[in-house]
Length: 267
Image (cartoon, rainbow, N blue to C red):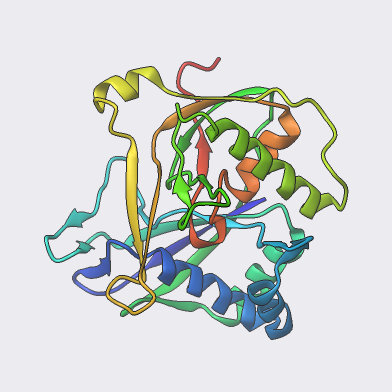
């Protein structure tokens, strides 16, 4: 399930940090807290557990300017600004209780704050789910993150398409989310293939890696690398649906792995 928030502002211009994922994540928890502080705390502290792992089972998009082709104006100081009045922000999760708490929380909180900017929530719109197949094309709205850490590694290593273990780790991650969501192991087909759109790859000269800084300038600043590109995925449809609703890859509740269906050339 997905909901899109349409946000408005009345200032001549608004400015946000380019690296604002942590602000959007905090906003989501604050909205849920307006509905149920108990659920918000449990989601933040525990999530949906699978053995020693915790999954929040939600993700979200960047903030987009409403209207086709409209883009943020980027500045050298790490901020971005716009004078456009309407913005959009989409949140995705397979958990109906999460979506319900978001909607109820927004009823109690018609104004929301992202960083130093305040917005009015004009509409909350539920989006129809697409039909899912075992071969689909998506556009990554935020980087797909995949990591691996061997016993003798000091730090985890980021993986990208073409790396030997990338597809295996991505498949494994979807299977764990499936189990956390349904309470039973995934025992279906294990076929899995992830392919970057070759035309996009050529246009970008192979540069599809994206670095995102979380909590920039703070003591707990973190840098995260992922793949930001249109891609084709061939896998069991139930796992593709998990990826669409929860996010593909890791760190979904921090805004990574959010996708939309790529309908170009379909139909």
